[in-house]
Image (cartoon, rainbow, N blue to C red; front, side):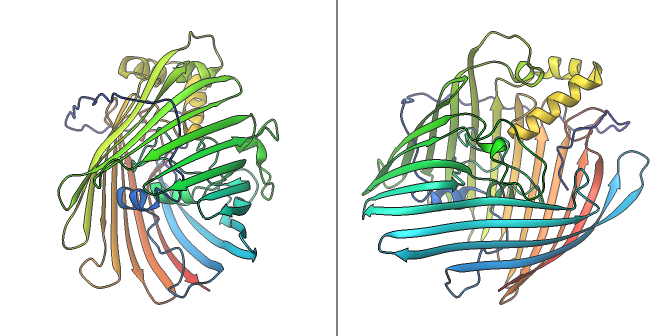
Length: 437
């Protein structure tokens, strides 16, 4: 079900009508800070296509866990054959106070796949979070351990989500909300200071291992803590409708990157958002192939609009831009060139969760209580504007008191070697059941 698996070009072709958009230019950027995850929870939920199911049953509990079973079928792009798949998952979340002003947080997920999703291992364990939290006083918090620090206000592409690279161990859905939630956190020391309408965050994440591993039950510190990194952030609500956030991020072997997030209300039912990051870096192809390239200033941008109707239908349109990625001419040249270089670049961009080409367009829809109560409908369309390939993903999910029933379907189309036209699975569907304990 993951669209990004890099494979040699396949003989398929699809023509789409041209789509052209001009990137918006963002100014007035500062060199400090990140709004902490708690302060941005409401904005992020409003702007992103969230993990469709509720994360917990209605009764509050320090322990939240569920079991999920899924079965599905994929149609291969090569030969047109079909293959069945099954998955069993266990997800556990613990948020336990054990002393005055002290909390212990644990989030872990085990996915067992038939056949194995990658390599010889059927089971893959993802240690999402494991940290201690100390509330020094009412407005000051310190966290130590593995933390899933998610940043950004856009839906499909998050230029300021600096800790996303290498964090996906077991992709079970292409839903952006699922990818952000079901990933490895990074080991860090994080301090947050809060005040009315604002906050300041500073964190440092040390190097703990050299490289990532595919061992199924390894905490995989090499994927998230393979170099020293730091981040600071400042957020201050300027007006009731204007919520800016400034970030600065850096690390061993990389130049400081600046970031900026902004959400603003446009009337009672629409929210506009801008997410930007920029700094000196090499082009992505040079990083992927480990070749020489002069560092220059590169910009990454996601800008969009979310509109919510009275019938609980939220529609989001988002434009994404990455100046470090390949333009149309160089992307076409890479597709026609050496297969090894093409595969290496595709694998690098998937691991980094970066755009392979400079421009993309995304449309997202979430309809809660659609047609009948407790039925949610989700839809996503991703279009690569360089090669006109596209991904379509649909989900229908029905919520019971302590269970969810869902059906998901996706199709990836495009010419040979394009972003979605090279994926090994042309079509796929899966039915799943989730039970909350």
